[in-house]
Picture 1 (tube, rainbow, N blue to C red):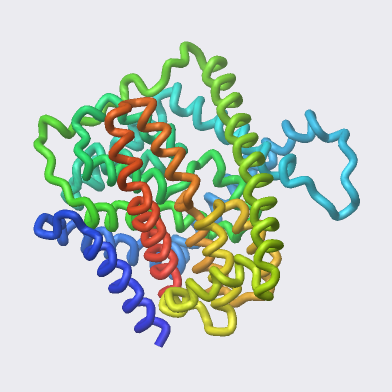
Picture 2: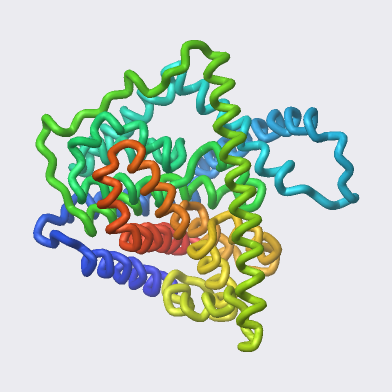
Amino acid sequence: MGIILGVLAIIVVLGLAFLMSNDKKNVNYKGIGIMLLLQLLTTWFMFSTNIGQAIINGIAAGFNKLIEFGTEGVNFVVGGLMVEEGGSVFFFNVLLLIIFFATILSVLTYLRILPPIIKYFGGLISKITGLPRVESFNAVNSIFFGQSEALIAIRSQFHHLTANRLYIVSASAMGSVSASIVGAYLQMLPPEYVLVALPLNMFSALMLASIIAPVKVPKEEDKVDVKNVTNDKSIFEAMGNGALEGGKIALIVAAMLIAFIASLELVNWIISFSGLTLQELLGYVLYPIGILMGISPDEVLRAGSVMGTKIVTNEFVAMLEFQPMIAEMSEKTVGIVSVFLTSFANFSSIGIIAGTVKGIDSEKAVSVSGFGLKLLIGATLASILSATVVGLFL
């Protein structure tokens, strides 16, 4: 029964994307079918084979070792602060680690290690699926870098981007997460689900965006250039700039958490007369899709409230809310919700993407603002698709 519901959920998600499509005649069905098959094979391989499990465990162990190194740096700076026994300070224990991960990414970019790898995998995806190279490169790039950085990396091609192409690259940026904050996620959610969400969300974002905004691109307008991806003149400048960028991200996330959590409490106080919280209301709204995704009826309201919280606030707020529930819920529900949460699909991302595009090309920023809500719906559907695929194997 679970598999039947999961298949139905996939059909519903793809059907909704098709209804939203602005060019139904030119949808690349072959490419979409290939990406859906790649999703299923990837999930099966990582969850159902010894080699896949070994890869997940190895990557998780690598991230944990990096977290240890980052913790040493954090402790040197703030280790003297007193914390009650058994307590923790989220900003120190989780967010400040973003600085170290951002530094590593900056150095790997300066050394020209990451850009060719991203270009190669993007080209491979383009060749297999028939999608344009720029869009494929951006999708892979969005796994490693944040929404703004991913879009800036293709700024030289912005003059070639039509409204549909701009939608696809924006959807990829919103549907993925940055590697610089994956370390923070791994401390709040089971590592195997966070790691499998990275490739699944990449494919989901590409699939749904390609249905909603199909494109056909002439070869002369589809080139990827990774020669000028960094302006750093030395490895030490790369480290410094990476650390500053990571520090900025940590502070932004902290500021948003303060604002969103406080606002959530305010809204709950205002609607307290109803006897329900905003999270509970969102749980009822997402109840039907939660059932289709494979969440059991006795857990779907709580799970739906977490997923809804992520959409209206951000993934960190939802993860903090979900953490205490993990031990009480079934493995399948934990997996589905964890994968759903591992993306930037929320209202605040619309502003981040629109602001980034405005900095690159002010005229195209008008297009982003125009399809902002459509972008959020598409990215949310992508999260649902990835979570549903994972649910099929749990």
